[in-house]
Length: 112
Length: 109
Image (cartoon, rainbow over all chains, first blue to last red; front, side, top):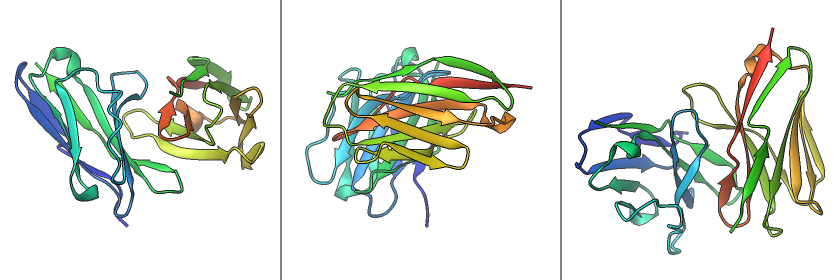
């Protein structure tokens, strides 16, 4: 079946603008994660959704970052008033109760 | 919350030799430990995982060991090949999955 998809694949924006990144998880996966990966760096945890539970937002770096997951499926990560340090690849991953995470291809965000 | 430490950050081994990457975790409730491989420009992909009721698991040239008492686990790659060059991430999960900072593995010809 289809894997995790993300859109757009690339996003170039100007400093101060808002951006929305989308993630379509694997159908039936109850867990959804957002990570940020700067060039040559590790996977920085941002936010975690599990079923109908309140999301774990402990990794969001500032109040400019927010995410929602509608209907337990698609998720949107929103970054308001983007800064140059927000430039990175944003990865989404989903998993079922068997735990293996499947990653999407990522969105490369460039803030000019 | 969970904290995962990974060492070394960079590792170079001669082709054909073995590579070992080590991780420690802090939350004794963690019960699932996956390893991911990320090739340049690609997404991370699961290569092997182990659960807390098992001490060792092997899949061809790759093996993972887990010591729950010491809260550490290791990835072993034997007979390394050029295609093993990549960044490897360990992770631990109790509730959510937390990753180590990664190890960049270089296989030298």
